[in-house]
Each structure stands twice: as C-alpha cells, then as structure tokens.
Amino acid sequence: MKPAVQRRRSTSAALSKALGKSRYHSSREIILSSTHGDNGLPAGVFSNSNSIFILDGRVQLSLGLQTQERHLFLFSNMLVVAKSKSSSSLKLKKKVHLSEVWTGSCLSEVSEKKMSPDTSFVIGWPTVNYVVTFSSSEVKERWLSMLLWHIYEMKQTEYAKTLPMQILVMDKEKSSSNTKLSISNMETADNIIKKATEDLGVSGRPSDYHLWVISGRDNPAYPLIGHEHPFSIILGCLRGSVDQWPGPSNGLQLPEGHETSQLEQLPRDRQCHFILKPKPQALGQLQRAPLQKHFKRKKSLIDWALRRSVSTPTGSPASQSPANPRKLFGLSLTSVCPEGTLPKPIMDILYLLYHEGPSTQGIFRRSANAKNCKELKEKLNSGDEVRVDGESVFVAAAILTDFLRNIPDSVLSSGMHHLWMEALDKESRAHKTEAIQSLVKQLPEANLLLLKHLFGVLHHIEQNAVENQMNASNLALCIAPN
Image (tube, rainbow, N blue to C red; front, top):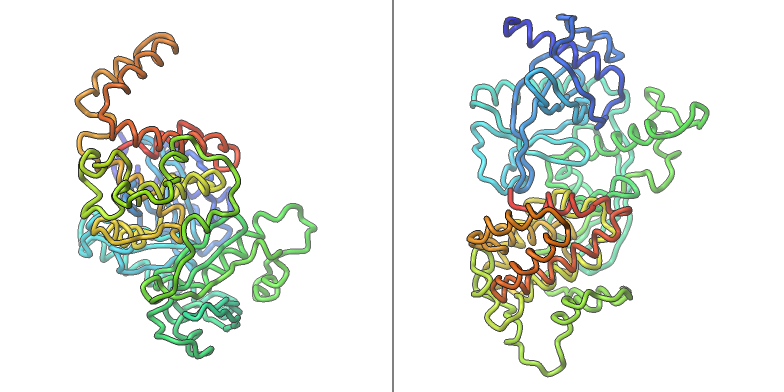
C-alpha cells in the first residue's frame, strides 16, 4: 500500500496531467486515476511553467437546498473542482482561472441550509456562487487566506486591469437609460451599482437596486449578490467565446493586452449584458401585469386538469380557492385544500411552469437564487398576496419542489410505500399500470388533485425534452425527495 503522502502526490500528478489537456472552464467529465506512476507535480502541463500546486482537500459545496461532496485543488493560477468516483479516481467537474474567482460571507443568500461562518464561506466564479464548507475552522481559514492571496496575485498580473461595461439602467419610474463605465478588475457589483446610480442620478439609494447579468444567448438573467466581480464575468465570457469559436482563421483571438478590442468583435448574442433595476421591495406601488395578461401571448392548450382549475367562472366566490392560507409549507394537503382546490399560489406556480418550463433548459435541475427562494417562501407561508408571474421560472420550480418535499406523509402516502414498490416489481408493463392505477384511487382526494396537476405540467415539459434537456428520468430525479 502506498504511503498517504505518496498517494496524494500521485493523485495530484495525474490530475495535473489530465487538466493540461483541456482549456480553462472545462466542465468535461474526465476520469483522473490516482494510480498514475508519476509521483511529482508537473506544473508545465498547465501551459505555464510557473504554475504551482498549493493545497487540496475534501469540501462540501452548497447551493440552495442542494449539497455536494467535492474535492478542491488550489494551484497558483487556477482552482480545480473534482468529484470522487472511487478511492482511486476523480472526475473533473470544473477548473477556473484564479483571477475569475471571488469570495464572500453572504452564506444565507447562497444556501437555504444553515451554515456556520466558522467553517464556511462563499466562493464563486462567472456566474455562480456556492457555500464551501470545510472540516474545521482552521482548514477554512487556511483555504480562505491562500485563496485571497493568490487571487490578488493573479489579478495583479492581468494585462487588462480595466474594461468597458455597458449597463441598461431601469429606475422606479419605469424609464430606462444606458450608461458606459470603465471598471477595474477589483471592483465588486456593489461598487459598480453605486458608481452607476451616482453617474446617472437615478432616484433612490444604491441599496435599492440589483445588478443582473445575462452571460450568453441561452442563459437566463442572473442577479448578482454584490460581492462578485463583473470584470471577471466580462473577461470570462470573452475567454469562453474564444474557446468555442470554430477554426483557426476566424480572426477572433485573445492576444494579451487586447481584451477591450476583442470585446467589440464578439457577436451580440455572445456578449455579457448587465441590467440595473430596482429590487422588488423598492418598487413601491408599481403594479405588475396580472398573471393572465402576462401569458396572453401563449396560445397552446392547457392540460385538462390545469384548465379546469385555473379558469374560475365569473362571479365565483373567492373562497373557492384558498388564496391566502396562513401557512402553506409543511401542512397536510387536506388542510390546505379545504374546498377541493389547490391553493392559488401553487396553481399560479404550476401555470407559470406549464408555459415557461418546456422552453427552459434545465428546468428543475438548475438551481435558483437562494435569497429569492427564501423571500418568496416566507411570503407564501405568511399568507401574503403574491403574484408569481414576475418571478424566475427557476425560483418557481424550486418552490414547487420544496412544497412537495414538505408534505407530511408525502403526496403518494408513505404508508403505502410497500404497495408502490410491489407495483413496480410487476413483470409486465400492463400489470404495472394496472397496479399503479389501483393505488392512485386509494389516495386522498387532495393528493390525487395535486398529482393530476403536477403530472400534467411534467408531461408537458417532458414532451419538449429535446429543447429543455429534461426527459422523464431527469425530472423524476429532480422532483423526488433527497
């Protein structure tokens, strides 16, 4: 058996060799074997003879309600994230240039789980944040100090220390304007919000505004918390576009010191777009369009179960749908569906997902902004009147999943668990279907009602799996309890 130090060195060597074959930001799943014979650390494979291995360790990365076990490797110029496949192999998940990594202390805005600042901090890169948790406070402090030092060192060596940043500014009066700022590689999103609001003299305080970024054609708008570096987002977008550009003679290169001119050559759908707009609580009395108006352009037929409950006849008493239950999460379905209808907030979320879900890549799989989820959940749980039409579809998906996972006794009734398992063990598809249909009829009326609506939405999303990349198996994995 190899000594611990030797095993660690061989793992790092194999990792270094494998990483040298791919570009920055690679998310390709490469198996890295620790049985590699070289016990050294060949820095040259990083295309930079000055690349030095610093430290590595096992951590937990948390985002929203999800936590994943990962292995971090810190080098003098990059951060590597890997996943353990076995005791002798790792799978490469991400590698990021250190100049594009940021840190923060806003744990509650990234993860819904309670994390201790003694062993955790926020780490991120364009355009995602995680809470990283270490085995002890000493290990956490060592990692944080090393990261901050080497991030600073890498930023000092960047050839471009300033870049132009175009921002669309929307103020409380619904008017919009554009401003162009020169930003440095050390400025945070909060710094830039203050600079932009002062530059344009918009109403309200800088803290009333949120900076959003759209980094590419297929990515939704992402709200920045405040500690992120927009400079890194812009440069990361530029590097990613150059990496993806086909052919050696396309004319778009990334020569050192010419990043600004290269930004102007990028097609518009590959550029980063920044939007500065008021936070929801700063909107005051501004009225949002009603849910039905928001979806007026949608012409597709709604599943019969959805159509049946969303379309309330004129003159029907409001009590037919419990719009404002005093509590929504963690209660039995019978108690929140006293009139034989689902709570209005849940119906609104299902309606939003029915229309936006099929065209949204990674719906239910991609994580939502933890702070927005927490705020919306608190409003729903307190009985506040809430319109979900202005919410992110990812937030809606996360809230629905949270609602399902908090149903006491589960929507399928945990007391019937062995019966469901027996039904799945039936040999033929016909026998399975017959057994499942029989069990469904035994569920409480409220549970059956929710299942009809839920499966109507999921089926509609699955029918467009080619676009959203969420087939039945993927949806099942994301919806099922942890």
